[in-house]
Image (cartoon, rainbow, N blue to C red; front, side, top):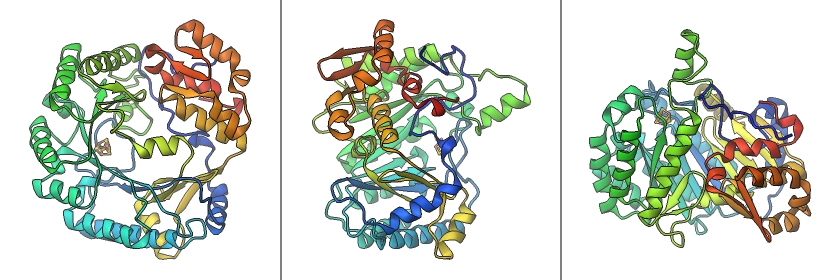
Length: 436
Ligand code: SF4
């Protein structure tokens, strides 16, 4: 029997998206030594390497936000934090695991990386460039909140070498943005978009969320029309989930409600499917369960594709995630212990988990499924596993449900399957990881 959690119609509290494997509830502080030990041994030279930098500052906390963010930090706190990241970078560069390996991708996530001033970003990126070999760097991705941008900052980002700029539009309705406590308004989207176009980034992505509080069919269809008018290289659409530590969940608890005040999962899936169909008619191609791209030949997303295929990644900053050839780790989850740990000369690791070869195989499979199609050959070659034999009964069941098809070495999700891929993935987890 296939286990399908979160299949209810109503949106309830909990994490819906599968962003990693094994699940976070089995990462723990007892395993921190595994990551430390990994840093002391030389890393593989044939595995791509990247870096993730977490900038945890935002102008306001969105009601649906579950990330580690601060809205009250003073300039001195921010400077101290950036100094700590620089020290962390220098320390990481000296590890045997890095040993001169070249990183090919760098991702600035948050929080709001664009909350930083041009001078702060220049200082941070210059330090990273001096600290790590830079001649293999192919992609620098950077998340922006529209209201934090100025023309000078946008131009500066281009000059600092950002190759993929991602604009967190989320919705075009000021009323919906306000209801969800989003800091920006639509005027700031249009103003910043002109600057972004003028700066000519190699790639511009626009983020939307299907199912913010107050979303309606009419407004969503308008949002689709507006994003097509903007004509970005890529559009990423998330279905609204309500994890435990969000303001929305807090309010639900106070009011004794267990159903979130957002659309049902069926409606959110339909909205994303409608958006994908409209974007396809406008010339875009679906490249994952969340993203469409205008030109699949030109518009790559190295961070996603490398990570989902097993690349190593260094974590820099508070609560940042990293991966060291079979060991996942996450940095200290609060800014004060993070900075303190750096100042004491430690790696600021909070929790970690080591993986067996089987778990590595499952991780690669579930993450690749989010692209919508994969080749079974890779699993045979890399792990010696025939996934058709291993998961044949699940595949059959999903085929019968109309969510998946198999031809030759290819396993492909139907559009209906792609729209709900995250809930379909739990069935491939080891039984001990299927606990919701
Ligand atoms: S902008 Fe992003 S990181 Fe900041 S509060 Fe909103 S959802 Fe969270």
